[in-house]
Length: 77
Image 1 (tube, helix red, strand yellow):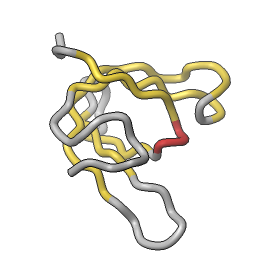
Image 2 (cartoon, one colour):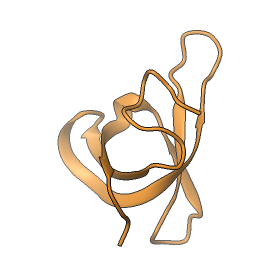
Image 3 (cartoon, one colour):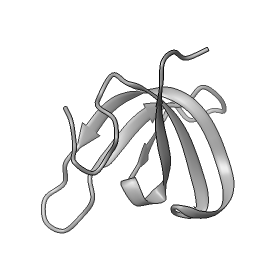
Image 4 (cartoon, helix red, strand yellow):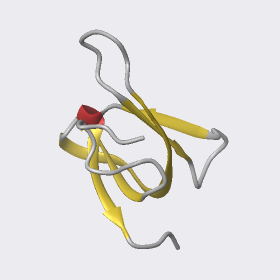
């Protein structure tokens, strides 16, 4: 599924840079992962993208478009 709010689609490998204050401020997390799902939410709420985390104890994370920066990459190492 594609979304107009994200520069990628489900199944794309994405470099995610989560920043302290959304799209500005200090980078607090940076990882590369495959987008597992993009969910459109009703009303004025933003869509969310789900990524499996390559580290830590959490299995996945959901991120809104304003919570970070996203860049499609060719492959995940």
